Image (cartoon, rainbow, N blue to C red):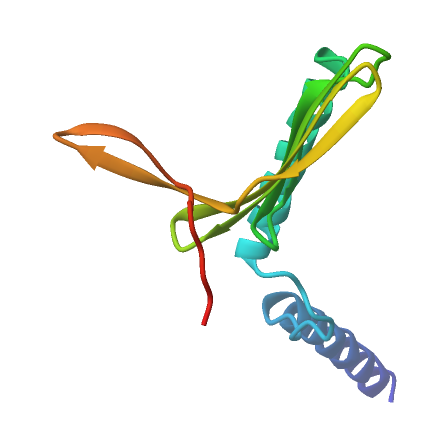
Length: 148
């Protein structure tokens, strides 16, 4: 009888060890939705870019600002003189990256002695270009636009 009890207790321990080993070797499928590797990389690079932008803000005394949104492929670039009684110059733009090009929506604020003029610049497109082996940037500025 004692031998039977010892044998039963040893098989239950062995069976428990087998189940633990099985669960370690073959983990179950995660039930929560996790980010893909590309989303994790995008978020990491966005955080890195925003950290760079934060330090650039501090070093330039808020004259230059960069903000990035990697998920929506957007960036915000601002630079200019802080408002004063004598002169105001601010450039604010939203850049959207699509199909290898950057679409830029920009606004310019220029002022002298408290009189400020707001200028909405036309939407521009910027894309990489090459001419005779020399690399550069092509800037497309619409002079006249008409939609049908």
